[in-house]
Image (cartoon, rainbow, N blue to C red; front, side, top):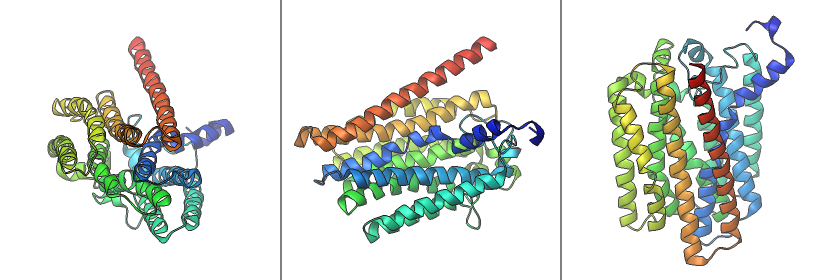
Length: 350
């Protein structure tokens, strides 16, 4: 789209599109999980610090989106088989927003996140917060560019399924409970291979611009083998942790309930839905992979809340976090409805 036909309204819509707001819904879950485990360890939910943890996660997430769009522009331009989940927002590619605007927004968001880090009450929280901001920024920004050096998948897992919930736990409990780390371990593995699924869809364009993600390096077949094997390791590891007394059985039961989604993902990958870079075939796979991880973490949060309620009763803190989980479930259901409606419209137009 040329500058001459881009209206101010187009630019505003493009700027909002850069935020990729639908992805921000997920981080309610890991932050809530960190807070819930802290409550389960006997600490009262301080709503002020819980709010700080949640706003911090949103700021970091938004910062990453605007930063990535700028530093990933070459790769996004090369990607002609993008999906709603991969290939960026396309706002910069379509010429709706000046790339410098995206970079400027990321700097402002980085400063805001850093301000919250400084305001955190303990050195432990500040160290975790600063580490989160640094890893998120250098996910694609030079000189580190983790996602260009086969470290992007692990970086996302560490932030989303490690640091965000840990920051919440430290702000509320002053430390990271071992139970939280045990619960997070299998979800982090699933998150890492979920990012492999996303990068698997971008592997051709990524290779063309020198972006060396794990799927670019090892190829389709080995990537599928790693992703499928990780599903078994994650659920087996979760069961082992439960048997060792590290994960409460009610939490284990809730998380294991998501295994059918894992089976469905494996089936789609093994039949080759990601082998050819065809958006129509890839979209259901990346959608499934992303929502599988969301539901695993959501199930963990639900299991923790039920475990606390059974042990200590349904108090104020459990009620607050249950409300957060219910709100997430409602928004998630609405998103599924929108996706189903879009598929139906495409089928009718075809």
